[in-house]
Length: 476
Ligand code: GLU
Picture 1 (cartoon, protein in one colour):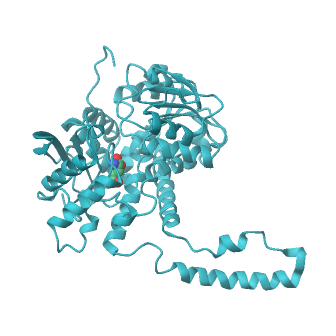
Picture 2 (cartoon, helix red, strand yellow):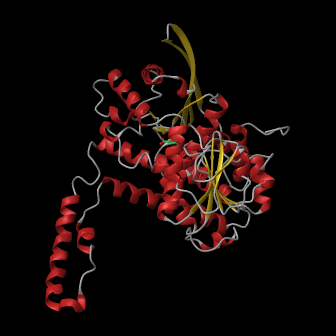
Picture 3 (cartoon, protein in one colour):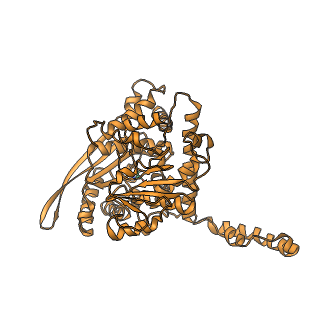
């Protein structure tokens, strides 16, 4: 950003919050209570690496404890600071309220570039950070449950879970102290894809609302829509992969660290991802033409823009040049409060972060429940369901034989119908349901009230209303 002063990330979130509460009728003082971050713990710890002691700085911020445990990822990145974790923790509060996962909001971060360390070094650092947090109950199955975020994934979550278990050997619920674990270590099917999958379900639901679609000037469904995605990390990759392989969308632009790729005909997202894995960037990838200034791609003509990397990429400097009529915020805070205002005036529809990327925490919720119930989803009912299906199929088969060709079953029907849902299917179904219902609550507020100009304000109103109800019920 050049020459333009913008509020910090946390101030940006607060400004958006303020816009929404102005339209609400909250008891005096409650607004401030909900807005402020309850506590932020900063830890500095040393780890002996490569012959010397290296000092690391980490944070765990708890925004709201109106429900416990509090929930939110742990990020490993050089840009981590207190302002950022507090903004992200606040977004977690509103996100959880909007998609009705029974958690307060929290977030953690460690200032580190994970690519600079060997795996065993990262393990040492992660375990030490986890130790510091766990001994203060900032990792705890009933108080604070971290998850992956930028720069962390299943591997780090497995280390954290193991560290907690070593410190709490008799806690039968120890596995529920963190989510996003690998499937073989207490995780759940579908957690890795969850945030990107949620973006897909969010867009599908948006396109089921013709009045909302009309505000973008677009029409029809996702098929053939031109999509530019910024960031091919876990979220951006899965969103782009599912949208292009299952909904017929065309990925016409991909922005990565070293630049961007464009191809008006659409790109094979998996081929680009493999190229990046092998070459460290998109340059030279035959799927599209290389654009050295990736940020410029955000301003290209397209139908849907998906910022899926870091905060603040659409700001006062470039907002006026954005051409996409629809932005879906797969990242947290990719549009600053200033840019949000510019885009609103331009008539751009923004599907806000607290809804758009809530798929991750939704499936984290399923994983946490699975850990606490100590049983895989579907284990009790799957075969019973299959047996009942078998009854119907046998009956249909009997009719089939009786009526002959005049009334025959569709090929594959038997196999498809007979198979009871496994964990992955149940997770996807639960996620789809969550994304649909949350969208409807947001959209309904947007339409019902003339003073609600956009989906973000609607999302805040729904979320803040729920947090307020929860405080009221506690007698605060
Ligand atoms: N880090 C993710 C987010 O920002 C997931 C949080 C979680 O699963 O608790 O929503």
